[in-house]
Length: 495
Picture 1 (tube, rainbow, N blue to C red):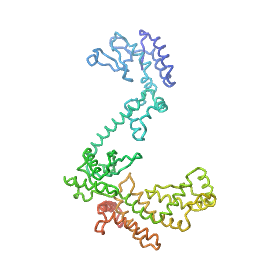
Picture 2 (cartoon, rainbow, N blue to C red):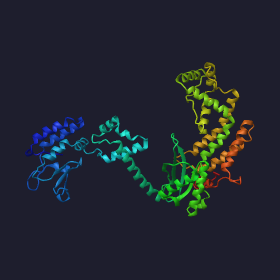
Picture 3 (spheres, one colour):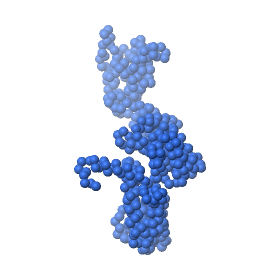
Picture 4 (spheres, rainbow, N blue to C red):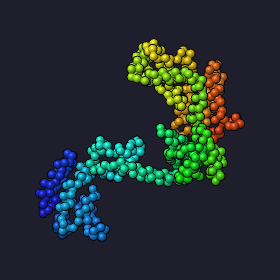
């Protein structure tokens, strides 16, 4: 609590304090009134019998030897900006006047000292993290409405410019890099990598490299090491050069266990160069026999795409039908009326697929089958609608949908990012093999043809060159899972 000496002009100070508080929010005005009411409070006595103002409790006194100008200085504990000569000859009036105007001190009193102390550096760090996490533009920090929100929440906020925000993001990136370098250095096990190429709408190529490992608490950890631009041509050697430099940069060359890639030919070349380089220095397990892992979700996508080729025309009709309905608001209303006429109670919306992602095509076919009767109603009401599949095509679509449903479930399982998938790999690849084995023996001619096409693609990517075995690496994960189950109480007899 701050008290004022009458001998230092207390009445003038009270008047000045009242004028200063006029522009402060109500909650601070109330607190400042309490402060002013303390002006008449009795002061503690020193050993010499003189009264000492508690205003000194709100200041840090710096010794003259540590001061830049050789004078003993008092610095405000709250704003850290105000500095006064700490000498009894000058009295405490300047210190008292400062406290009546110090915004940080008013916030301290308003929260009774229990509130969180504002730190401008922490504020800037949080803003940088928000920009990075949500992809905001740097100009976001200069938007008037955004600044008003921040200054309303805390009047001590000093808003920043886009250049400052950019500098803070780069500083945060650098500090996180140092932290991740330290973490990767201390990883006790091996690290698995995934890499993929991405092309922007400006046709610029980017390479993403991600590290996956299990920490000391047996938690799966995934860290994006780099998302960097890569110059054309995107050949296997160029990609190898980039990835090799990144591994050296992160200091994990000796900890690599495997790298998972899609089935582009350039990726095959890249991993050949990488295997030769790392294995030549004895850095790989089993001489790099299990270094290259094909992305299961991507292989599954290729397998099913070949199968969908048998009903390509029917899929195209469904795709054009969905596009036709979604083209305008009036067509959507018309189709909704058709849904009501067909007495369909389903609330799921029609789905337009991405042709390169088969599971989205499966979703589109599944939704279309729900509204099969509504499409027929639309054909009668709208003469411009010409993409309706005939009855045989609908039957074929329904059969293919039933065949592809377990493949869709397996794709979702393989695509998980919050849990390990290697222990699920072998079991579900085997499940796919059994599904295809039944499909090639199906009584329906079209389904048999579909099964043969999918079987050829499966054999190409998931059988050894000898043609009689599967990749044995992931069998170990399955075995370990079974052993852990058998080790549990009451597990006898499971197998």
